[in-house]
Image (cartoon, rainbow, N blue to C red):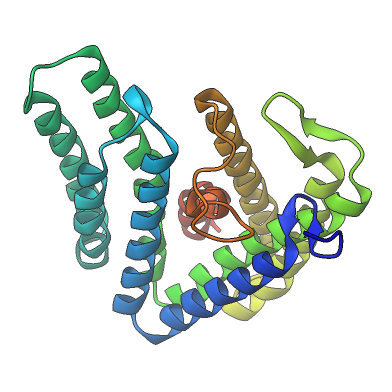
Length: 271
C-alpha cells in the first residue's frame, strides 16, 4: 500500500468507495420506502453480528442465531408498533438467550456466552431500532437524515482534522488514535451543519436549537466511538471484522450512530 492511499491507518481509496456506496444505499432507502430502509438496516446489523461472532471465540462469542432472530423481530415490529415493537424485540433477545442457555447443561462458558449475547443485542440492536421511532414522525425522513448527517460529518471532520493536525491524544488507554484536535474539528463541522439544517427541517425552529442538537449528537457519537474502542480493548481485538474494506467491521462504522440515535429521539421531543 502506497503512502498516497494509506492515510491515518486507512486504505483511503477503499474507504472512500465503500463510504460512498453506504451513503447511496442508505440515502436511497431512506427517501424511497420505509421497507427498503428496514431491509438495509437489517442486513447491516446481521453483517455486524456475523463480524462480531467471527472476531470473538470461546466464552466471549455471542450466539448468532439469537441475535439474528431478535433483529428480525425488533426492526419491523418497531416500524409497526413503535415502543411496543422494541419491547417485543428485547423480549425475543432475552427469551432466546435463556432458551439457548437451558438447551444443554448449564456451564460457566455457556452462561457467559448467553450474557454476552444479551449485551450485544442491547448495545447494537436496541439503539439501532430508534432510527424507526424517529422515522415515524411527520418529517421523520428529514430528522433521521439530519442525525445520520451530523454523525457522518463528525467522523469525516475528525478524520480530516485529526490526521494532519492531531497532536494531543484524547484517551491513550481507550482510543489511542483519537486526538483532541480531531474531536474539535469534527464537532465544529457537524455543529455548523446542524445549525444551518435545523430551521430548514423545522420551519418554526431556530438556529440555536440546531446548534444545541449538533453539540449533543456529536458528543454522543464520540462517546459511542470511544465506548466501542474500550470494548475492543477489553476483548483484545483490533476491529470487529473486515466486512467493509477501509473501515473494518460494520460495527466499527456505526458505533457513533448507535449512541446518537437514542439521544436524538429525546432531543427531537424536547427541542
